[in-house]
Image 1 (tube, rainbow, N blue to C red):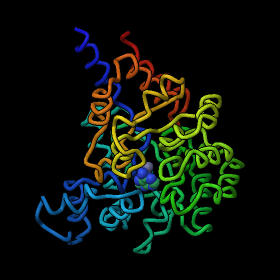
Image 2 (image 1 turned 90 degrees about the horizontal axis):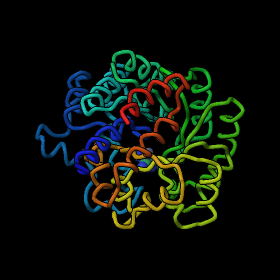
Image 3 (image 1 turned 45 degrees about the vertical axis):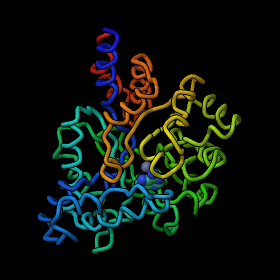
Length: 337
Ligand code: ADE
Ligand code: ZN
């Protein structure tokens, strides 16, 4: 009986993903469809080989190596048709998995290798949104190590297209945190703050808690990962006091060695400390995961049905969307208590 209740809550908990990269969500079946659509030859016709090329290897040592896996998916995302169709296909896949709301993020500057402008890439993704039944919003990523003018262009585009729901709702900073520290992006997020663009920042993943402290000082209301704040009681208190939401992604963190084992995974500790945590996939294609699997991993570590419900409540509150939409999500997902 208890188990059944837990299963039910668990299923419903796995219904919102706030941290998912478009290029990281390209599975082998989606890659094939994008290749056919754009007349691109994939490096192999063999399904197993293709899967191997698209997913991270067990030998992956860190985030830098993990990020090398994105070159093939990105080759398939360099035309308006490719980006539009990818948004549609990824959303369709999420919908089939039982998600009811998702925020898909991508870095427009990574989609300009074949002549698109950043704005073309944003337009294409917005077109893709129109073709899906799933409730999806977009987050535009700036890139660590990207040229400053390109990152500024991304923030300017976010300002131009910003809506409270149904399109671009926020910006982010992604990429190699271990090589390009958060503190170097102060100007960028000053601009985002002046433009009143909500933002999240990948931090406390390949770098330590000080990276999260910097991101919060810039004005981030959410942190991508934040898994390493466990290294600093002071930053844990800061995250708690400011009500910052952590977008945690267990499989990703294991694969990039942000944490070494699931038994070291600090999510339950954070929840017990009153830190606002959400569970997400990050790069389901690259990692070979989905949201249900992420919750299963945490269940194995002792996550209870009550905690799953809390995670879902947190995801609704953390979402970069309007209060009206949150009200609908609460009604739909939390009603049957
Ligand atoms: N881009 C895609 N996945 C990422 C991650 N885990 N960290 C930083 N940038 C990313
Ligand atoms: Zn990410």
